[in-house]
Every structure is written in structure tokens, then in C-alpha cells.
Length: 171
Image (tube, rainbow, N blue to C red; front, side, top):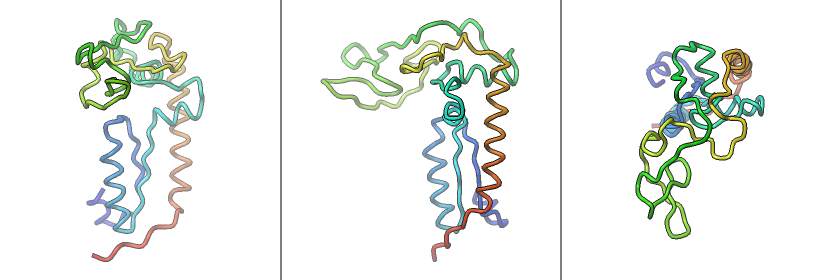
């Protein structure tokens, strides 16, 4: 983004596909803002569920599976599309799995950063999101979902392109 900014770009939209990228995209956005630019981060998986509640999903659930199926159904390992999250207490029973990278301890929760595969065998983390079972995904619904998200992003580009730019901070 900084190289593009050096060539005159002032507005950036990043279509994000991974929660682990959020902080670095935000840091980039702040650096660009100081240079008189704007950055918009679009988390497609959150946006899809906002555009249609039926598409709302968790990590590795039907939402993500249908998105992949829309692109290439052969990329899905069908043996992992089953009912029920299968989280495990990878850090032992005294630090049981709570949510995402959090574990419980003595009435509170703390974060222990580690890969999702360390506490779930198929990557699915729904955390109470109904109708997100991976086996319910279809390529047809995935195409509808991705088409709607793409239209939203295209419309956003037009509006974001008119947003006033901040003044660059003096160095």
C-alpha cells in the first residue's frame, strides 16, 4: 500500500479473508491515514452474514465451505463436513477451551494465541451460530453469497472513492 501511495493512490479497499490479518490491516490503515490516505477493510465473512442472516457463520463452517465450493467444490475435504464442533482442551483440563484462542481459568478467560488446529480437529468453530454446520453448504448458495458480497464491494468502491481524504501529517 505504501508503494502504491508513492505512485499517487490515496484510497484503498482491502478485501480480507482471514481474521489473523485484521490487526496488520488496521496498522497499515493508520499509517496511510497519517499520509493523507484512507483504507477500508472488508471482512467478507462478517459482511456476508450481515447481508443475509442465513449466510452467517463461524470459522470453517457452512459459510466458508459454501464460499470455497462456489469457486471449486473439489477443494473441500468432504470427510471434514460433519455435525458438531469437536473442540478439545489442548492445554489440559485446568485450562479448558473457552472460545477461539481463549481458555478458562478460575472464573475468567485469558487468551493463549495458537493455531485453530491445536484445539479443533476440523477447524469448525461456530460458537452458537445456528445453521452453520459445514455439511449444509452448497455451491449454489455459495455463488449467491459471493455474488452479493461482490456487488456490495463494487458499490462501496464508488462511494468510498468520494470520501474526503484526511490532511497528511507533517513529518
